[in-house]
Image (tube, rainbow, N blue to C red):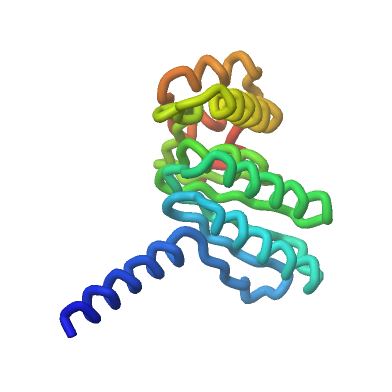
Length: 191
């Protein structure tokens, strides 16, 4: 019985971690959907965004609100989420990204691609280059170089900073406030 309890607790923790990463909820108004992104980004995040956008297209909804409070996660999954949000925009869905608390690392480009980007006055952001620890071969280094270029390009395409300025900020861990993000053109509204 004790062993079963340990397995059950482990299972429940795993499920709660997965559910805590990204959850979807339909807005009462009927023309929009809300997606909550909190915790570590991973493939599940992109999958939830994909399901939400597919439902919106099927149901004729036109507004997607993405609430983000995330320390980041897997950079490749960030690119998947960015692609899903850009696809939604190409289908006439207005994407509103709302940042609260901390939006860091791989979560920043996801926030950046919103049509309207809102941050709470106490939101902090963080940029850095993809982690290369444990790099063991040239193929991996080549992939990390590509990820780094994509990360910086997405940000440069969605704010007023140049590629070179973002590259410089990414050299070290760069933390900045919502006010700084607004000055850089990464945030449209602070509230």
